[in-house]
Image (cartoon, rainbow, N blue to C red; front, side, top):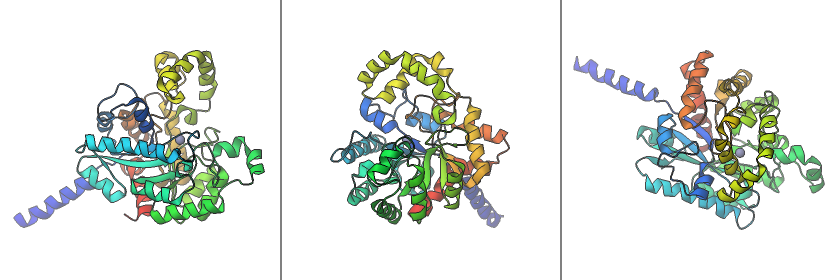
Length: 387
Ligand SMILES: [Zn+2]
């Protein structure tokens, strides 16, 4: 009897481990807010979308924290600013050593989850933060950078952004390059060698395809939606999505109302114009226009809620991409704490389970939902880091 009991027990334990749900969100901007407003996201906050208390409630296992600074930072300042944001994340690890830990690969991520710790990763959003120095890539990697978004909305001298390729095509042509330069290709190779994932959420189409022709590892789009459902320049066209799947990559779907719903800006822009004076004074208080816009939307909640698309529209982006390129290539990259509006019902990190319910109602199996929630991220991370 005892002989039978032990293998049975082992099987039960292994089964429980296999069923341990892992939920990963590949894009959140709270770090820059934390730095500006000295918020302690270890404690429950009344603003923003993420803190460790709500993360637990929402079943979030791992967050890739976006390290970001605007294009006003450049040579001599951008890399420093990126490191200050990483410092503030490290301070959080020191304040809450039993609750949160830095992880760098899929093995460490699983280990943190097994030890009931919130797994934190670092994504650097904008190639301008490496200031054209390979040793800065090494340094950010040493501090935990798991992905580099090759550009933000601003281009670098070696890669052009979706914003510039779409709105400033002529001036780019005049400047002499569109897409990835020879130096840009060296950077891609270096990122591949170090096992840092290449994020194509902000680069333009030319850069996108140049990277796919260069990289030896699967890439990601950490926070993007489907262009076919909303023709916004930062959303990915069907051909891009197919190419990404062919490369073995994963697109993590963005929750921002402006990327989800093609009617959003038609409603939000007139509202922002109408409240311009108030927005300007809030910007002075918060030292950041995006944060000020979020606060303005909170003040006029009833009105701003009327701009929000239904949750079903976000689910449509996930389902559309799954149908186009397969369930192995889709994940979650909310852009929480980085935008002023999200679909109805998606107020913060406690709301992820609603997505699982909606997908299940559409007929998605538990295995498929697990892939979208975390399995695909673990796969693409392992393919890059080797662990
Ligand atoms: Zn972004």
